[in-house]
Image (tube, rainbow, N blue to C red; front, side):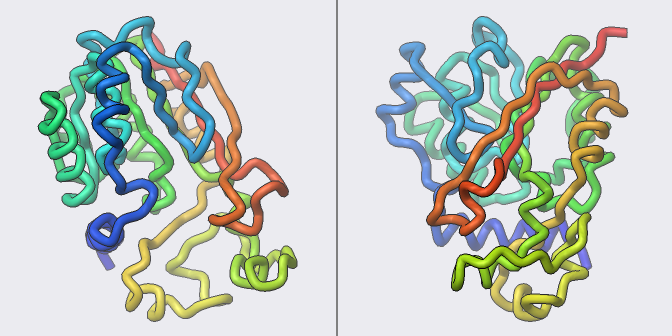
Length: 261
């Protein structure tokens, strides 16, 4: 099974139907960013600290990695960055392109796999912005390796990801009764789990396939690729999205810097 192509099609369908992460920002938000007032998120709620970014985004070469949907990309472009949006979903990329064009912003969009950035030469970018998306990747080692390769020395990777503990529980039971019951071992994979719902039902519903990754893989993997973690925060979600809200931080974010060797 080609997991990348399956998730590409699943996200195209999800974006077409519309969700929180595929609803383009209003023109007013983009105009405010042009005027210097802007914020973006790597996780559901907490704005990324401004000191995680360079003092100015003017002429910063920025790779928006799996960040499509007409939200973060147009804001970062309006703030002055030279943005390339690279995403698995054609529909998400179209929303980036349409939102930017409507607001007089120029960006480049490229459809592809975040584990394969061969479209870019070594040391092409000053900054990579990667909101929660690596839950859709089976293996993170090539993702970190490629990010390190395309970053310039001293460049930064800003990345959001799910707390792996999220995948331990029976989410259907938690939604129905509020009971928290551990039913999965970590690392979790939709391909291997048949505890709550057969894989065939998930595929028929065109739901994207997800994979948990250990903190060692998430954070230690960046370090092994030559990226020094220089910032970290945790974030919550909301009660409408999960019954686990309030029990523990559901999201994390890291700022990593490519070592100058």
